[in-house]
Amino acid sequence: MNPGKRNAKQLVLWMAAFLLLMILFQNLKAPQFEVEIPYSSFKQKLRAGEISEVTMRPDLIRGEFRKAPEKGADGTVGTKRFRVFPLPDPDLVKDMDASNLSVYKGEQDKTWVTAVLINLGWVVLFFLLWWVFVIRQVQMGGKQAMSFGRSKAKLHRNDKKKRITFKDVAGVDEAKEELEEIIAFLKDPAKFTRLGGRIPKGVLLFGPPGTGKTLLAKAVAGEADVPFFSASGSEFVEMFVGVGASRVRDLFEQAKKAAPAVIFIDELDAVGRSRFAGIGGGHDEREQTLNQILIELDGFEGTSGVILIAATNRPDVLDPALLRPGRFDRHVTVSPPDRTGRAEILKVHSAGVKLGEAVDLEVIARRTPGFVGADLANLVNEAALLAARRDREDVSMAELEEAIDRVMAGPSRKSRGISEKEKKVIAYHESGHTLIAKLLPGTDRVHKVSIIPRGPALGYTLQLPLEDKYLTTKTDIMNRLCVLLGGRVAEELVFGEITTGATDDLNKATAFVRRMIMEFGMNEKLGTVAYKKESGQVFLGKDIVEGQGYSDSTAELIDSEVKRILADTYAKVLGILEKNRELLEAIATRLIEKEVIEGEELDSILQGATA
Ligand code: ADP
Ligand code: MG
Ligand code: ZN
Image (cartoon, rainbow, N blue to C red; front, top):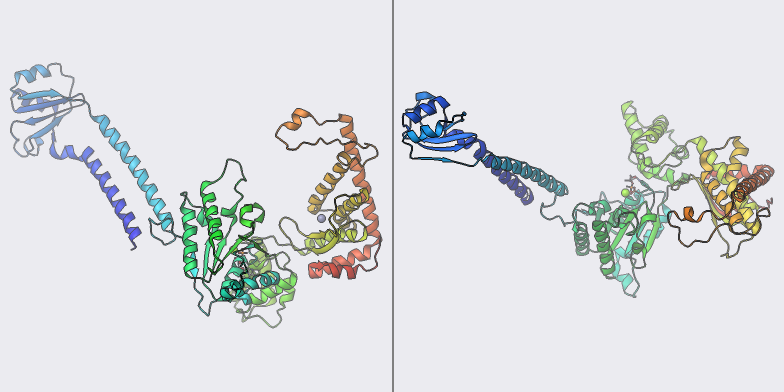
């Protein structure tokens, strides 16, 4: 047993003993040393002068016999002390006077003391349970009870056989490339610092759950063959202020001793949330922990050879202080894999599984858009289990296909899977955006189209502006509006049915048109008037106080103009897409096939096309 456990146990024993003692005093003491006698025999003995002393309370009379009665006589047990429950007896004092009592006296009712003590007992018991619970919690990490501040980080010394390397991580080539430099540094820190270069101290891995962030961090340590310390952000935010901070200190101390080393903090957002976000002020504990992480990062010397890698799927909520130069200045995006990536991941995970002759992992990859690494690992495992249950010699296509459905439906699934049909709709939707953007002048260049889900978006068309613009013409705005509607129009054109997938596009388009009318004065009917008031900061209720600043009939006109412009644009886009139906098909087909199309390839598909 470790010392912490013993301490806790001793404490419990002490408390229990104390409690027991109290109860004994209250309830058990009296009956042991007193005999209870009936009132009649009390009166009788009083008259006979056999009683020497009486103490009276409203609820109880206690006294002492002149000499202990014979054992067994009157049902007594030979003790000198007795107690009697009083009866209303106005002659009692007269009788006592007549008897040759040496002392008789009154006493205050002491039952309230008992009550207090018993209640106190409950309070003590409550604290006891709480204490035990707390200690238990702290001990979960297997550390000593009293050393809350010790880091619970797990250290993974790399034994050669189980070492995780880049070979175990597939489909995230870009991320791997960016991490190469870190590995080179960990392998030979001196080489880098010799020339006075500043080594990145912190690397932040962004990406949805299950894409392999933890795996990548481990692989970095594995590739460089250095120790790997891992902790989760949520572990730091426990219950006592200051505990998290001291755990961080301890973690970094351990790592520095083992340098070169990798520290991995998972779920950084649990501690690294923006300090000013949220209602009701800050969270002291989290803030202190975060500050300690910043202090440790700042305190790194270039030669310490420790690299901090952190992972999060909520980069948007991180405190800006974490992202400043010299802290987490390296950002690596770990995105969900595309089709080829998925095939590679499937290969990695089926390496130890006996696959049948006819198995084609490419086909499985094609059927699993939206699956992340963790899903695919799960898929292979499910298939192997199914095959075993069916007493098969190897895993066949049938099991793999069935496993897809199981993973899709499974509770452990973190990301959303996409059906074949949905994939097709998304592909046409994105192709619509892309084609319109390509055909109309004044829109930003399409850099990449993807139907791999990212965040809440099912697909995306990434447009990067060619040049920074400060002024936008009305034509440009109208063309951008067309691009926004392109997705929805393509859906309707191809499937004759529309989906909810265009919600965000429609919101944007509507907001765009409203601004055109109300801020930019770009509408004939409403004229060159700014209907929207400039208000630096919008406070709650301000709109109510100031009113909207224009009449109800103007409001109606604005609404009808918004509607008209959107309808006109819709018709225009529909015309363009109908005219270029083959191109739309070409992009969509390629997108379904490859899931991602980059700019140059797009250019080659669309060569010579004009609206
Ligand atoms: P994250 O930390 O991003 O949530 P993990 O690294 O914990 O994801 O991934 C969970 C498991 O899923 C891994 O242990 C691995 O088996 C599998 N996995 C995830 N991504 C990949 C990948 N890119 N290549 C191979 N396996 C992966
Ligand atoms: Mg993880
Ligand atoms: Zn869209």
